[in-house]
Image (cartoon, rainbow over all chains, first blue to last red):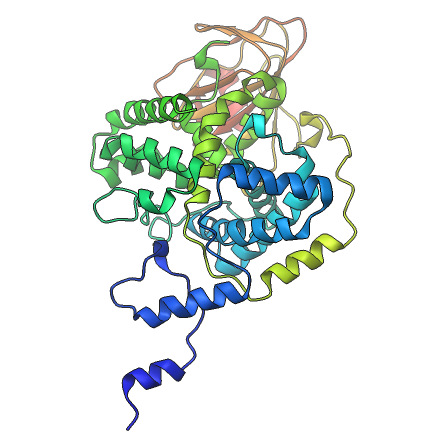
Length: 239
Length: 202
């Protein structure tokens, strides 16, 4: 008699991402393992030890020696994360993956232009991605970066994936700049964090922000200004 | 340049994240081209964007994703060293129209924009048509300068105005003042010059 477990073990599952690194309650652990195995085979390790220093080191290796192993490590860490970020800005998965590809190819070509004194590697790589997203949207003559108000992948997912509103700091502990940003976000009061998140992922009219957060329209502008001023000083102050 | 003539931090955050509406983004690009010393205002927001990228959950990719990237980097690489055209030369414009005494307006063609974009050229000593507006209005000065209640406004200045702001700028430079506007809603313009401007910007 075929058991359900035996069936699950033999039935191939479609490739799917794991939300925020944690299996959802309704998923079997075998799905997490499956995804992890697939990622590992294709070279996409979770690379939890990718720090800012490591990324800068890899960029340098690419710039100086055209080091393909270094490139592969950068690709393995950043490409999947560029893809997931792009989907939060409304890009379909295939297009988001193409953009991630183009971004890393551009990183290879421009690696010698990276200047660690002017900012961290993740910020530099992200900026390349933003410019490619803009160009692509322009070429496709579509309304760029339109995150539909109902899109579940947009700011609903939030900066704070855990239900209690605090980002998974532990998961970020090995990524120094991610932790810097995570610490800064945690230091903000919840209402400020939420408004920063809405501002980051969508270009919403203040009336819409007021509606979503259920706050008076007149308070939106000042709350954003206060939150960003605070965020800026936390991010700058920690350096 | 005082803060009221620089993009707000809200705009800088969205510029860094990539979420900023494309028309307003164009104006901010112009602002940074004219005033590159203010690019450093972006740094903390780019750090935030980088931090969010580094902590984002990795999406599943195709099995051959890395192989494809390696193949792409092995191919001939395009020449990326050409000097870019000046900002104004890169803009795609519709026809210039008369918009009142000493004033001409041309629509800027940017299909992905959700704001209406216009280039406006005003002769020295002339006032821009006095107008209020229904939505937010963004302006960046490309050439020349003007003076309004807030003081002197020079190239690179980036102004955001809400419907409650009333302005009556007068061009005080020796050359024509050229500005790029992004409007969130049609402007309301008073007087005969207003009729001309409204017609020109229809």
